[in-house]
Length: 318
Image (cartoon, rainbow, N blue to C red; front, side, top):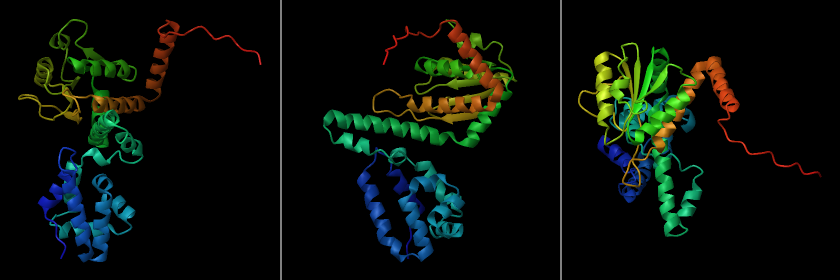
């Protein structure tokens, strides 16, 4: 009889973490391939699909999984029961929770492997590239459509929105505000100029919203702003590397992003990708009004000479 315990499944997908031993993953996959022949045909087909497509299995609903595997959804339900889980979702949950993005960007990424073989500097560059791709992929995967939809609704329904960040995160907050104001005219960046965040939040109220961007080590001024927003009853959207950043910080929505990098400091590629997706949703939700506002901004910039343009090149007669 083929049997894999809950602990072994979790161990299997934890071995996908690039910081762990990749040989352990290979050994477990080899063991699964050896044992799968002892399973009934349909269950073996379901197990083979999971082994061959762990990323898709982690993300797809059961009907899509069954369609791709060309078996019934019930086969996956029976496989889950055989493995000791009480439902398909329970079987899929550890895959989703432990899925590390080392496999999410493999498709069409042969150039990275080729680069890694071109010498020490190229190998280091390949590791850096893969790290960035993993970070962006994981951040976007964690974003989720339902989570994003709820945040967009909160921002659009708020009487006034504030976005804040400190130190390096201020650059992200500034960029988000610079673009978002064209789709969401009620948004404001704090702190402004040389003021403090708390000074600029003096008018924050229960009908408003605070968007806070902070990553470890967390900014004291951002923590204070989050606590003040909670006391005043405002809606809070947190964009951070953790859902629990400090005592007394209770938020309504979280966009978790990955900042793990190959250098000693946190990297913001994943955060930028998440912010860009959120901006796209805001612009789409704003409809014709948002598009007209964007066109008005662009026309103003063109008319005021905001963009540099060189003199026209001379025409060449043929």
